Length: 266
Image (cartoon, rainbow, N blue to C red):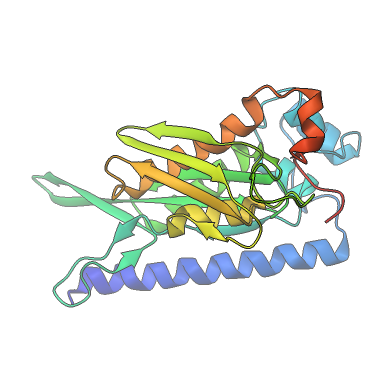
């Protein structure tokens, strides 16, 4: 193993430790019921209203389609959010080559030498109807991770859950209400409702997104070059977006046990 690979491996371990530390800090914030974030100076009108306590529900922003420009808004309104870094790259080398890693490394050939860049994808969710996926890229690993986490908070979406499987007659929002499709590049992903107890029958990285979104049972079908994990993850995000954008009739809400966003029963 070369010195560059050792340095990147050490940087990855430090990033993973920092993500775990952030999860522990988030749990402490929830326990203390801290409303405002220390040291946050809002720059937008929405941020000031959130800090003053005039806006206390994230649905007020998402239902009206208001753009969220400050990640601290999400941290204040949803302090129970959990973070996860997805494995989109693989390590290089003779013995450790091919092992999955959270950073996808690319490099540019110049006269001065090789200029590497690191890209990563982060996902946040409260396991109860809210999820966000963000992409970050930088010359170093830590700034790439910070960009991905920030973009994931700004790209937060609310999804619809239900029980749309004809094999299941329960009244729990454990799956999705109907089948949806997502496409990115050549990758096509189809999510289908599954009966209770099936589990997440999908690619492991997409399963992490669905788990943080609060979906417990799913069937999936893919087409195209699914080895490009970034495209597959983006196709999964688009499929989840279509859950909330699809128009539903009121008469089908009870039969599908439709729940949008946070389930008050959980």
